[in-house]
Image: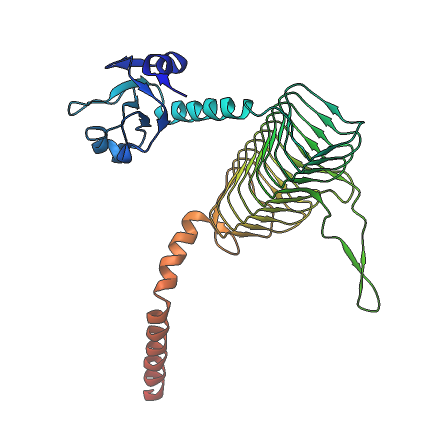
Amino acid sequence: MEFKASDIAAFLNGEIEGDGKVKVNNVSKIEEGEPGTLAFLANPKYETYLYTTEASVVLINRNLELKQKVSATLIKVDDAYQAFAALLDLYLQAKSNLKVGIEQPSFMDASVAAGKDIYLGAFAYVSKNVIIGNNVKIYPQCFIGENVTIGEGSVLFPGVKIYDNCVVGNNCIVHAGAVIGSDGFGFAPKKDGSYKKIAQIGNVILEDDVEIGANTTIDCGTMGSTIIRKGAKLDNLIQIAHNCEVGDNSVLAAQVGVAGTTKIGKNCKFGGQVGLNGHITIGDNVQLAGQTGVSNNVKDGEILLGTPAIDFKLALRASIAFKNLPQMVKDVAWLQKEVEEIKSKK
């Protein structure tokens, strides 16, 4: 697909500087720009590439003051990064909307209520009493359990598994290999040392605009629901245990692990490999640096680092002290020796 610079500017409410008739059919990094592509400049450290890039069109911030002549056509917008993201989203939507219809072999039970313009890929299986909204895309080898609801505009990429009774909201994205609604890790110890499995009869609810990364697993509630709230984004390889809740617009990076019944507030940001104990509450706007281990409740707005988790600034100071521990041990040993010598002379 080709787009003229003037059309792109109109879509973004941007201002053209240069040839508005120039066309692009792809995107590129500004440092690797090629003719016929569109790039963007949001980070000032890449500004030097603006004057050398071969990209035909570049999105820039309106307030950027040019230091040299630019050969590319410029589109000036309020936020180049957000504008570029909007264009990519438009491109993906256009590409996704091309996929319509039911491929064979696949299976859809006769009781399924399917909306308009859905796509069902080959080898997908849709069970009884499933409700599928308009423009839903279900890629090959997906499994949809009984009584599942999938909201309008949602996309399930290849190999997604959704267990019985789960709910997927509108405009959700679930990436390849993710498992939604698998059993929570519930076992009762017996006197003989073995374990009795505790039946998991709840479900998972993904509210609107949620994105789930590849091979992430979200366990159903033992009773009730595990809930991922509106706008939350989960990266690849994350484990969310039974009856947890992830708040609105919270972002969790890869390999985060959340134990059962833990509640995460709104607008939280967790780095990779963060681990949360079970039955705790994390407040709103909390930030946890990568590999932080949390075993207790966290108040709104805290920024933590380390295991066990402590205030981020304190953790940085402690890390500096930790580097000096070998010398400090030697110094203390020397001081102890000096003290003993002084005592022996009295």
